[in-house]
Image: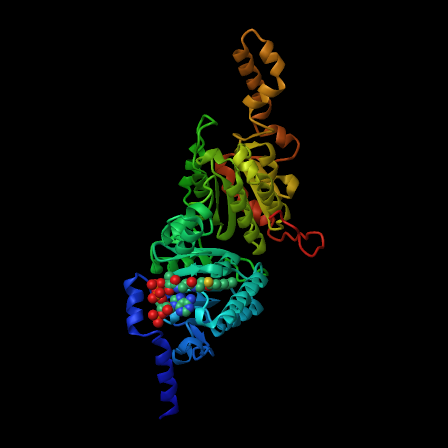
Length: 512
Ligand code: HXC
């Protein structure tokens, strides 16, 4: 046979994966094949495959008779919006996308290249887990991947897209990466599946309820982004990548942008007259950043803090904002963890931080205390304190108690802090403060209620404003809401060449 034809035949064989019937089954289940996914993820015709002819070496349980070139994972490199990425895509039609020794080695090979070359890795996961017939070698293969995930953490962005099953120890690779995308109804992640759960805890739960996209978006916070199908999900991964640099030594690309000037009018009336009423901080974000540029991360989890990427004058920034519309924007365990992880990602990859602050404090109660709000809250404090990227805070309204310190205060290293005229910066709210410091006067007064109100007003007049903090330099300027965008653009520009180093150490010890 013609040698070239032989090659073409081999390619065709590899591309056929587990065969038509299994591909049809994949499609019937609402899923694309591994190759179709790569086509949608990458720029047209940019994919370069590696390891197409790799086969497993196992012989037990008849495996020697079921060899399919590529061994259930397609690996290689290509481009997204013109920038290189390495990618692996598990092929569920080949032995359920299960991970063998050689399957793992293929993934490790592209991870090594990505790490050496400072290029992001995107993993499309759709696998029945460790290849059961192979035993310990497939477990070792997982460990090889986990190890590389950890080494690559903070060097290159690592993205996991869950597009089918991801169960058992397999979940720990995505968990070690920076962001997880999930597809509704077709993807799930859990350490032990419904059957084991039933045996051990006697709970009856479906795969979807135990570890579907919605569960992980709302309850566990493991899932950062949910999309309704493969096509939409992959399109959004492409968009997401435009916010990121290629590696820790680079900055994110700048883009063309627009800003509707009418938003400068709109921002004036977002805050309610009554400072105890809620408002949606995302409306403030929208009136500050470039048009349609805000990309919220973990939108369904710990809604009392909003985090996400946006662009300001075409440059990527990371936003961490208290959300008065959810639990009054109070900081609790989940919000602290969510905020801290996001801050650390941005700091890894040179993404400047903007904090919008309106926080009444930390959430009181036995539930929070017993589950360790002390350690979890400290994560956010630690993450901000060690971040060396440009850091700016805008206090829109409340900045009370320890939360004032935690939310990127000047004293933990923020570069510039601004406050709106509506800011209230104090140890605590006026009502509670008056009750404590004027306890005796209030209880001895003829009309205790009137006295309390009088003292509350006295405290509020003194502290429920930004000027005490401005007098002491804890905020650098008091600005009008409509001035915020221009002030921030100028401020971030002034911080562009910031070069701050932490004290030399092996690594810090964040309160995990
Ligand atoms: C080998 C596997 C496999 C596996 C599926 N297949 N999982 N082969 N090893 N782990 C094969 C099936 O035999 C079948 O082959 C094909 O893939 C499709 O599987 P189906 O069961 O027909 O598909 P479906 O009904 O969609 O169910 C998918 C599934 C189920 C829920 C994933 O296959 C399943 O429960 N698999 C086992 C999952 C598991 O327990 N894995 C080990 C987890 S422990 P044919 O030839 O019929 O197409 C683990 C440890 C990692 O992963 C530890 C790291 C530290």
